[in-house]
Length: 240
Image (cartoon, rainbow, N blue to C red; front, side):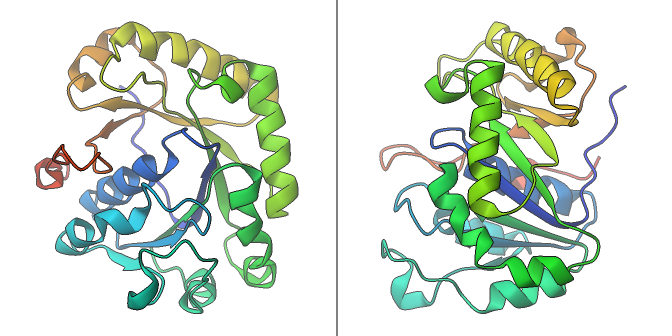
């Protein structure tokens, strides 16, 4: 039996464009909420105007998850607006504060602007890098490490763990997850950083049990969908 995902304090989610980090952040928030943890989620993606945490704000609020967003008039704006509430959240994160930063090193620069707040934070923040091994910039251990270095330099913070998000969108099979897991295991060994969890779409979650992965598996119920598709219902996530 794999250990359960347990996150507390400040958890920063970073990754390259297309890694699926925002989907992971949303589902982590809901999962931890389902484990009895009071969760607050801050949208720090000031670069990419598409597929941001704010797109799921209504369903998250309906689950009782506090979300910090830019001011109402700027929700859909492609502008670098950092809400002052974020610094307060870092200083007083409560049970769990998840910060969803923008993609690549460019998106991670916002974290450097919060450096003073992070330095005063107790316990120290965790920064988890989401990796999709099927994306061009993270399809080898060397490229994953190069992306890590670029993000760390921009954020002025160190990555403390990995999240494997191995998928090929609707074409994903358990074989893809198994292949991704193998790369993530090697990445964890080479870097000396833990593999916090792997992800699996809810349609594949039961089939991943046969893979016997040694880390927890986070079930993904996709929320960030193109306009012609409906997001999955998060209400099906229950405390285990």
